[in-house]
Length: 289
Image (cartoon, rainbow, N blue to C red):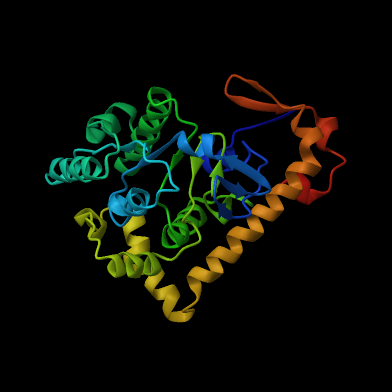
């Protein structure tokens, strides 16, 4: 038997065989990877308030376009790490009220969670955020949570995974469609600069999270120091990241189909995944990896 443990990135990447081929919008539906999400499904979506650029953005268009559903709940989970988080949450409430959409806010003591779980603040914040998304899906009877992750976020995510030692295709970064966690990331291939320019053209402002400038967190160090150096060597670094992401999705889809009979023999025991040796010993090395 093969016994092993997976890291978080690899576990998330193996949960689904749905390829990320990008989104195509048409009236009444959204098409992704060959599947059409009906208007009824699109209406059952919760959209989180991201700290930073997307905090107000996605709802500006939703509030104006009559073809889009009006009742998309807006959700947010202030982490109570910064004194201004309360005012940001209140600003989100006021903005949602002007658009006539529901707004859910849950205050989370991330420092206390980090201490109790023995983990870092970034990891604690991520866990709290996704736990809140799960509860919002249930309370709103929603099908999906839509986040505002963009191409710059993807570049940071790829570097973070590289530093943590993620394997392939997890190294390609977060998914645009994550059925396991019911997440959609429709802006994942769009650079932040394009989103900022679009917002300026509409005269829409946004709230910047001051903590994004702090070097206390690894992701910020990647954003503020490592990525600028990479872009100095390759100004098209973000585009290269997207190419890597696309290759990862294609490879993931291929290997999921090839290895489906093998994965069917996996079983979990005491937190470990067990696989009969006969199921993989004859496979090529690339498949065993």
